[in-house]
Amino acid sequence: MRALVISGGGSKGAFAGGVAQYLMQELHHTYDLFLGTSTGSLLISHLALQKIDKIKQVYTSVNQDSIFSNCPFTIQKKYGVNTIGIDHWNVLKNFYKGAKTFGESHNLHELIKNTLTREEFNDLKQGPMEIIVTVSNLSMNQVEYKNINDYDYEEFCEWIWISCNYTPFMSLVRKNGCEYADGGLGNMVPIEEAIKRGATGVDVIVLQTEVSHLNRLPSRNPFSLMTTMFEFMLDRIEHQNIRIGKYVANHNDAIINFYYTPTVLTTNSLIFDQEKMTAWWESGFNFAKFKNTELNQIKPEVE
Image (cartoon, one colour):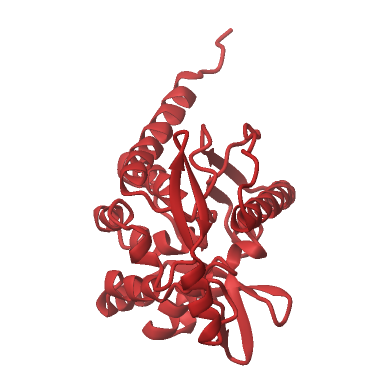
């Protein structure tokens, strides 16, 4: 049983799309299980449908308005680097409405439903593959995995949306008496879950460099500090998930193929830049091609 696991990473999901495109279209990898967290959850349904060009078009054309119904920050470019500032009016407007978060992401929910049709959902549900998204149940203090086979169209689209809600900048969703948020808050790279479900071969796309190459610029405002803190915590969660995944794989005779980003793509994955995301998709495709070409060139010595 082979699985494709895609980590969280916001706008960096474009890189994962490029890697997946190469694995599926050029290497002809087929998967029994697709498991994603956050931005990975957005990709996996379309990858399972083999509709790679469709999801590529989405990832290379979105902007802030495609995601946020109320964006809590402004974006400024200083010294060639995008920095964020507080959009005081939007934040106050959200609090006035009684929201618990700085911003809202209902536009993303609509985008998901406009992109994944009912017919496509039914095709996936009737097919042999498992499509699973990761969410964080804040009320129960646990990570949950939502299988497409257990839900109807509206519910599964909502779980995909919930998996991507990077609180407190995006929506907090109350469902079934519990508060839910981004799956990455609990499990950024759900390798362990894939192996628990029977995967013996796992291709894992990690939207982070394998070795830390990052020296962040000083925080300029409270939002900048908060995003830096969240990125730091998610990086720690990611490293822990990978270590656990490797441990479980060793004890279950499973093989893991990792695809990390070769460079730091961005220090703020909540900024959705069409030009950069287009470049990241191509970069992911070319990186997967280079890595597999390099591996094929390594031949055993003949005595």
